[in-house]
Length: 90
Image (cartoon, rainbow, N blue to C red; front, side):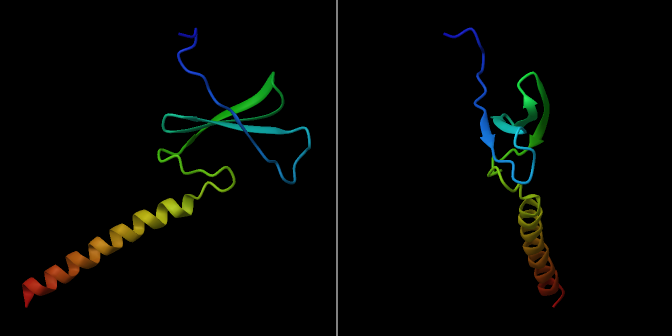
């Protein structure tokens, strides 16, 4: 057994169009990702990105995809309910 309860596995991400010294890394954690950005290990900003399904591919977070999937399912259910209501009235 190790002395750590959990070890983060950091993945380095590309930084197109930014300072060559800027480093961006992510680590998968429960409920999303830890993302750190900085120019040196002693000076990095850290944030948590919610992604319970672990779908972030490292390039595009895909927020629109999440909304579309939920909206599509809800639209289908609403249409079915409308059809059922019309049948009951007839």
